Each structure stands twice: as C-alpha cells, then as structure tokens.
Length: 185
Image (cartoon, rainbow, N blue to C red; front, side):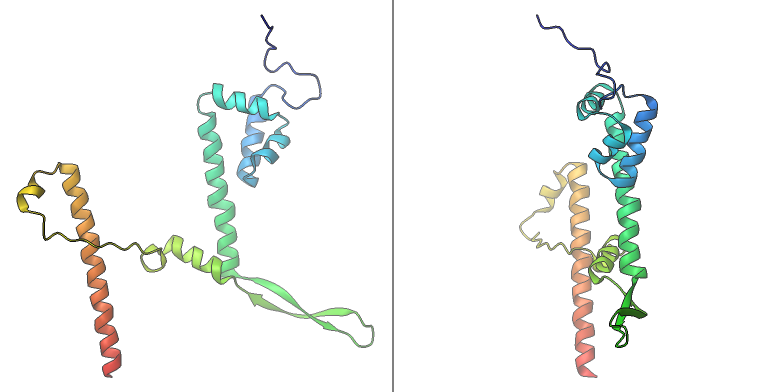
C-alpha cells in the first residue's frame, strides 16, 4: 500500500504551505481585489492543490470564495462601468510643436463609453433599458375549470404572467396613441 503524504507538509519554500487563517484571509482579500483565483493564490503563497483540498474539506470556504468574487464584481467592475460610462475620463489632446518637433499636450477632452453607460442603465433602469422579453399569451382555449384545477403555485405563476402581458400590451397601446398624437399635431 502507498504511503500517503500528509497535507500541509510540503518542502520548505514551496507553494502549498499549510493554509493558515492568515493565508486564507490574504487569499480572500486578493480575490476580492483582483477577481483572479490564480493571482490571489500566489499572493497568499499556497498551491492550487492545497487550495482545492481546502475548498473540498473546509465547510464554508467555497461560499466565502464565491462571496469574494461577487464583491469583486459589484465593487470593482461596477465601479469601472460607472466611472467610464457616467463620469467619463479625460483624454489628452496633442499638438506637434513646429519649433521642437515634439508633441505637447495642449488640452483634454472628456470621453464617455456609450456601451458602458448602456450597461449601467440596464443594471439600474431595467424597465426602460433592460433586455425585453416577448411573450404571446393565448388564453381563449383555457376553461375556467382548468384554471381552478391548477395548484396554488401554478395559479400564482399564471397570474404573474398575465399581469406582465397586460402591462406590456398597455405600454404598446400607449406608445401607439403617442405616435398617433405626434403625427396628428
């Protein structure tokens, strides 16, 4: 029978040292800051094998790892989308000086990312800018007795679907009326 090497007893100086509370904290902090498991692992000084074993054997670690990634997405990526889409950035304007032949910064222009602004709008204003779902509901063949036979959960779901369809239809009708008013005036 093969002798199994005890975990956490690797050669000195190698990655894969015991995954201490300090290393775990460092790993999760780096993961939250970079969103990259490999970079966080290297910063904490642990091997991928040690990390995988810890993920499998330690209750709650996989959840903590996922939470760190979610915070990265919310804080880092969300902040960048906001900054470039809403606040913009200054881009230098260059002019080549005829006397020296070298380019010089003579001013700045504020630039914005339309795509990131749209992504920001989709996130915060889903009703107006979110991806539209279309549905075609035909209830004419459904008898009232059939609806009563549905489970409570199914009835609630059907009510939600119908409410969404009624809102969508009302919005469509309102848009048609506004278009018609615009052409009449």
